[in-house]
Image (cartoon, rainbow, N blue to C red):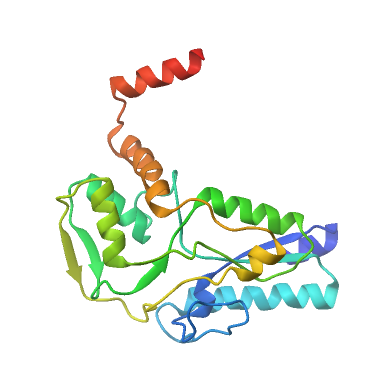
Length: 228
């Protein structure tokens, strides 16, 4: 793709990831932090793959004058995600809707930050329309432990949903939270949708796709909206 961008003179966007920071020793993580990654661990194919992609992107920028932009995307959620993609928000929402236990790995004290998809799209557009190469952290600084996330899902879907603890996965980062100072200053961007506002929109989409849920009330609302 970088070769194609060079040949046709295109602007190239690399959607990198917060995983480049590994299990960070700096908190929150700024773009200047080089990370703490196990290069031979079970997660390294993804972590190091993205780090290598950033290296190649900057090599093409410096060596071949390709216009590039680099976004480091933190956990993102929203409608139309794959229901069984294995991501934590998808897992919890699908499990709660199916009346299955919410699976929390380890003690549930590891933290993540969750941004709604519309905030991410706006950030990517501002990045591509601007003149700054990056990298830029694109994420929501609101930080939740996995237990807190499970509790928000319970509040949204089913207060009686059971939480089931399982052994933690290898090299699971303990903390993850973006420092978005650079994006705020240079892109004029920051997320607007808090988790408790965005999650119900995702739940509504998952409910329809899992159960084919079309209630009479929803149909009436749709008809009224259309007629207006």
